[in-house]
Each structure stands twice: as structure tokens, then as C-alpha cells.
Length: 332
Image 1 (cartoon, helix red, strand yellow):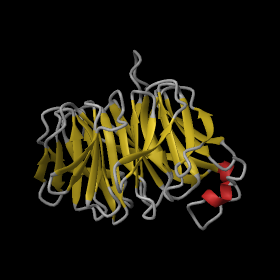
Image 2: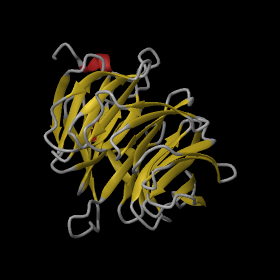
Image 3: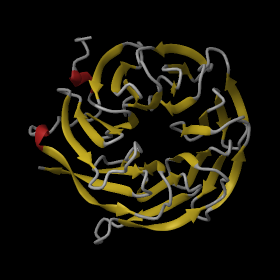
């Protein structure tokens, strides 16, 4: 595994700052408006001041960031339609549409300009836990509590349901690999497995075996070479997506509820029940750890969703208190 020098995995032409260990995330403010757990947050590079979030309050919220203002941003619109909590939301790359998955068993495609539901996707027998857009926005993948993974087009037509080699328990997370050369889907489940699927034929490519507990979250690096997964066993596992090898593990010190690679730096961020950890993957060190000034009581996690701005300078963390906490990358 040593052949995997960190250099070849850089998804940026820029080397890490020489004082990478001096980097820290500074608290910038909060986006307030949801009345339940913020389960998902999404951004896109084509509209850098747009953030969309989903919540257990059954709503999606469209936020406008105000980089020069004294407040970090404001709620522009609340989108209602789902009859149960929203579990996941993703944006089309042009920022015109949002796609949400809900415990009401449906997915909805929203026109963000009008706030209207353009399409409702019906077909899952239980809660939709996770949704994703392909890089070209033409394909949609969903993962459900019914244990299945479905592929759809944007007209809400289900094109394929993966039943062969499927997860034997709830599907918690589905993501497309950003690599155009090798179109893959990565999924994770309560069966402790991470699965890599070939998009071309929807067949299983590899089972990534190693977790000893339920897997809640997966993330693929911006260059498509690495996959990270985490969950109940408190361990972030890093995998080579293409050859299916386990590269190394990082101890998160608690259940991992959300995880995301930085689009800019060679970092991995994990939200545990009590804090947000930022690892520098170059040396596997914890660069920073963020925690709540008023942590929730009685075993409720603090942060359950994470999202970077597309430039990698701002981190959004969705909390069980309904707030989205906003941090900026600064030099300590």
C-alpha cells in the first residue's frame, strides 16, 4: 500500500500549504430556520452563494450566502411537499434544481426558481435515505430502507433496480464517483458493507469489507481515486476505489454520522456524535476538531450533515438543533 504515495492522490495542483498543521477552521456564523435535525446540505460550483438543506421538519430550505454581510446568509425560501422528514438533498450542477429523498418513500425534483416540485419519484417501498446526481445530471441514484438501490432518469422513470448482490439491510448512503473515465456508484449499508457498482451494467464491482458496525456515510474524493466510509464502529476507513483495497483507517473517537472530502485540500472531515474532526490525509494527523458550545443531552448527536463550498473555503455543518454552523478555513 506504500506505493500509494500521497502525491499521486492530490486532487489539486497546489501542494499543501507548508504550514498545513497551522490551518484551522474559524467559526463564521449560523444559518437559522429549520425546526428539526438538518439531515443534508448541498452546494454547487456554478452558484457559489447558494446553499440548499433538508431537515426532519419535512422542509427544504434555500439559503443565500452574504459573504460581505455581517450575517453569514439568510433563508430565501422554504420548500414544502414531503409528508415525512427529508433525509437527503442534492443540487444539479447548474444550481437550478434540487433533488430530495424522504422518509415518505418518495423523491422530489424541485425547480429552485419557482419552488415548485417538477417531478415526484415513486417506487421505493420504504424510506429513501440517500439520493445522488451523476456528474452530467442525467442519472439519479437512490438508496432506501427497503434495501434496494434504484437508478432513475430526470423524468422520474425508474430505469433499473439493483437486486443482485444487493445490501442485506437498509441502504444508508449512495454516491456517484466523479470520475468520468470509470463511472461507478458507491453505496453503504446497515449490513456493514460498502459496495462499489459499475454504472454501465449496474453489476457489483467490489465489496469493501472491514467495518464492524452499521455504515452511515460514504464519500468519494474529488478525483475519484479514494473512498471513505464511516459509521457505528467509530472508524473512518479509506479505500482505493479502483482496486477495492483497504488503504488505512482513522480513529474518529465516536460514531461517524457524516463524512466528506475537501474539494481543495487533501483533507477528510467527519462529524461524530460530539465533534467535527478534520484530518490531513498527507500525514494522517487531526488538523482541527470543532465542538459545540452547547452540546445536546441524552445521547443525541450534535452534527449529522456536512458540506463544503465548492471552493473548499467554507464548511457547513448541519445540527440536530436545526442550525447550520458555518466555518471558514483560515490560517491559525
